[in-house]
Image (tube, rainbow, N blue to C red; front, top):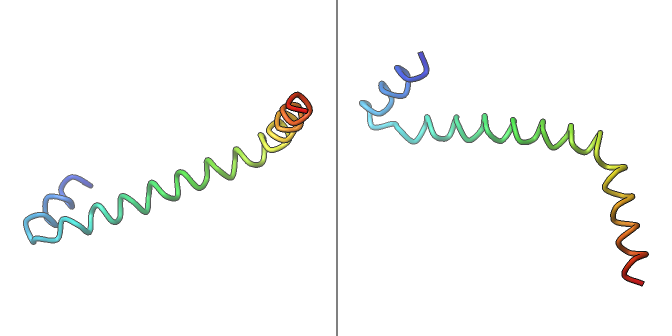
Length: 57
């Protein structure tokens, strides 16, 4: 279905629209992964950065 829509857009010289929509999809996928990572990994990352600071002193 999506391939047919992309083919139609390319035939109408509107191929950039499909890439724009695809970039929006990838942006939201990355955003949701970042939100998940911040929720679960923020405490772990803070502890590691504190250990590095102490180690560098």
